[in-house]
Length: 193
Image (cartoon, rainbow, N blue to C red; front, side, top):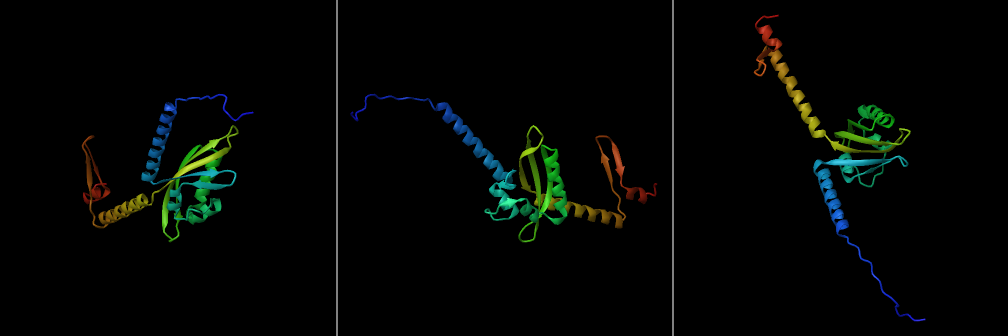
């Protein structure tokens, strides 16, 4: 016996296409990560076996919780505003029973006692028996939009009160249809029924 090699061989592969595909995948991943970061979109998967959520880092930021916390159904429900809890449960049941996609919003109460408004989009994979086997979704903090909506409503109510109290009428001329619309106050000012 000798330890000297008796033959040598080599195999070569052209990895150009594989490297190109890997680069395209990494570029796409980078773009998706940027879209999620810029859009402030949290995403999650619900593990049907452990009944826990597997979440992106932004979810913990949105919920204002520590990243090492395990988010399960009881913990999530402890954050939901009491007035929205039953509606949230009904939406989850609807998703589990019959939907493949579903969107809804609800409020949570964070550590400092403030309220956040969240928009949830869900997607469900079902087996041949139509049972949910995988649930995933996104969450966006829509608190600023909701606060702006409330401010607009408040200003609109004040304007309506000023119109009513001041006996002020207004009219609108739609030039595309050549239609003039009067408010009920204009009719009252002109004593027209």
